[in-house]
Length: 553
Image (cartoon, rainbow, N blue to C red; front, side, top):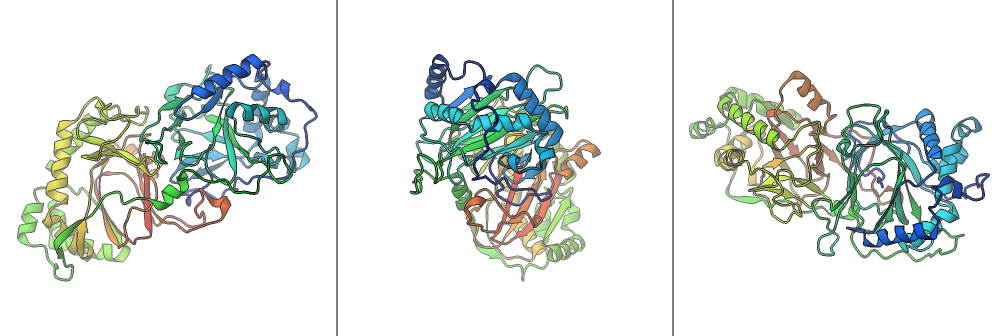
């Protein structure tokens, strides 16, 4: 259920692409694969039970079977995977996990390598056998499935790995499936608190827009398969972030797709399938306007604003560290920004504001149980003036005074009135002020004709912004005050490393219209800039219209 690369990775090496094979698979010595599955899987009574559950499943029809395979076979497969397959970290704005090469290529391996993977090859052949394909087709009613176009790989989700919302629509995929083989390090089974759940999203009013939060969450479980029909703008799903501090506990899975019949197969059609709804990728490429700009009646003219007025200084001193208001520091800041097109200003708010705000944020985070050791529930923090901003195909985060419409609205336990009042005052009295715009114009030497802004709160493991268009057609100055409490040098190093997310990544995206590249972006260039989360730091970034940014926490 994981898509191919959509954008260039932030910090990974080159990886082998997950290419499908159109070559017929040599049959395993077993002509009949029944023994690979649980003993009663193909019985009429079992089929009827599975079919009945499939028909009433929500938010879209899916099949969940556990156990699915003969247990010893699956244990042997897990051992072969761990001992013999190589994994590469794959990371984009949509996902971060480790993936093996395409398992369709097993037959092309040298004999010594292939002989180390007999159980894995048997499992693959059983999955694409006529018997199991017929079983899946009859359960879902999807019609014939290809037996010669195979498409599957092995994925490992470690601590902090995730996969954000998408619909899996690529080329001629018909059915998406995932088989769970988690490494448990002596435990009986995977624990829901460790994350890694498959989350299924409903759509809003029969549109192609998914709701903010999932309706169904399917936990990871040993020897379980989940499969569903791939439908554009409808089969929305994600994998929640894995929280597993034990490095030996990993969400290991085999994941892949059944494709439409190929030319030599029964059921083949040369007529392209008509898309009834808008696929994920197209929605991401289209983007949206996100937030409208407020025009300024008398725009700041950078060429005229060479010195900050005493009145502006007096007003800004209520909020800002006075060092940043001195002519000397303003000149130094201006020179650095003009040289590199970005700058980070630490200790930006004055001490009184910073100390008060830090304590308020820490109290709110503790009340909402926002930390790096637990996954908050969907709806956490949604209370009072805090609303979730979507659509979830592009973004999800809490926004102060944001639009309503979430399917998990008011599930938060506290409206955090003090936090709300303090941040709203900072937004309205500092960031929207003429004095602050004058300061920005002088520091950046950019004429400011309009502005927009919001107060965002990112919940760990839930929230993100994908790299997509936001209606910007002119260069902008991105002004971001980062307010992430940091209690120790260890915390600071962890945030700066990017291992726990929270950074904002600026990048350019190259168009690629080839069919095989639907979730792909270029891998051979570094991002323009990556800004880690920090405490009381104002980040100024000059952005051309083609520059996109993303973040994930």
